[in-house]
Image 1 (cartoon, one colour):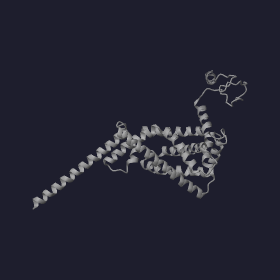
Image 2 (image 1 turned 90 degrees about the vertical axis):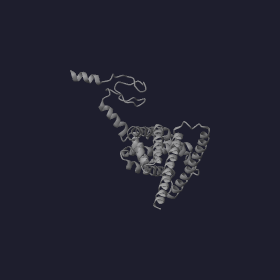
Image 3 (image 1 turned 60 degrees about the horizontal axis):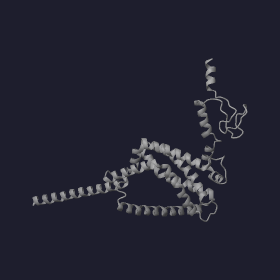
Image 4 (image 1 turned 180 degrees about the vertical axis):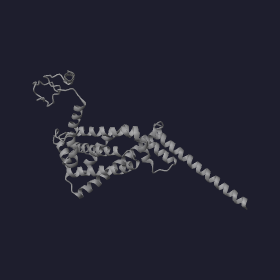
Length: 317
């Protein structure tokens, strides 16, 4: 009786209305003919929850896993297919971007709560124990904290910039418009960011590996995006090298212009006193004061040494 009672408690009430779209269902229909939703007969258990996870994320027929694998082997099928209206076979561009953001959020959470000091140490280990090192440590700490808190904004902001540069680089290719270039990087950048973030989670426990990873991951990102563009535009080796060089040239010009604008704006804001209460301005002032104090100490030590030397010489005479 106990087993029968328990079994009854695990059953859901069978309805003739689809829970997903409210379409009428016959009692013997396991799937809704209107939306394709599966009729559930049992309450959620750990077993069927795990089965649902496996079915959604690890099943070879699953859109995410198919998209993930195809972006390695046939990125032109995924990206080109989306541009042509394919929405079922592969995960849509913004959905894939959302997955990458989720993994990046997990990475940021782990770093912020358990490995922030290690990451800062890995970034500043090549400085000595001077005031400069303390300034660099403080600056990188605040910079990384801000980056972790606004990672999703940084991720999304990169994509239109890359799309614009790409459109300029491929100005003589009329195959894709600016919006389609945006889609290229929405998929490509999300995919390589997903890969490098996952690998980053495996190396954060070791400072040496973090430093190596920091040098390798940008190269891997460049190589993968070059591979995607080669596939989409059917570039030969010479054209690929030329377009990659042009991409860096335009990207460099845009970066320089950006820093010039920021520097000019910062100069006028600092002159007006608008930056006095900002963390960055405080760090710059602290660094200047630390360098001034260090120089004064050095001059003082040098002066005392010279005076002592002169005194010894006089006494000896």
